[in-house]
Image 1 (cartoon, rainbow, N blue to C red):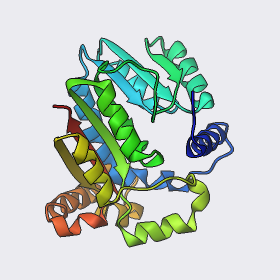
Image 2: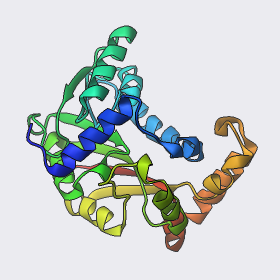
Image 3: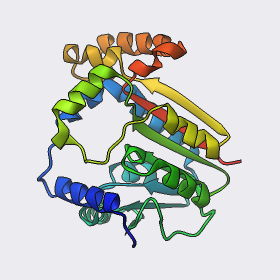
Length: 247
């Protein structure tokens, strides 16, 4: 497996993180994008049956295990971190789930071309050379295959200020999405939709605990949905859901 210096840094960061030595201070805020992950999981649940699926940068396999229960014909997860893959394999065995895991490079994997019906990932593309990884995803997808990814935006100045205050929470080479990243995706995939999440839900995060049962969260999520219908305000979002289809 050939790795660039950036790949090696990412590998070392995530091996350290999954060995219990890393810090992810922003985890407490993820409830603010509960609706994003709900939509992500709904898409995969509705589209996974009898499909060949790849979890692209699977980490310890938390999402992979969920999708394995939706009756795909085969599901594979891969990640650059050996520690993550070891944990994923161990967990799948305990749960008696049929998942193939392997250590590989997302930017240049060893899989055959046009192998997968669906490729998905959560918070992975912004760790990679996007131009290279999008071409790799296109190579791996079958004709009319679909990709779906959850990624952070890098356009809200207040969120970027917080990122600058907490550098140890992320790797050196992370780059939350900007306009040029969406352009790179649209240069490869003609059919692309992007949905935006996390402004009011993030601001009012202290006022709710369980978003699925909170009226405050529901109200804020509705405000966000209305706000992000206006293109100008989309820079305020924290994260996006990207769906692309290979023609």
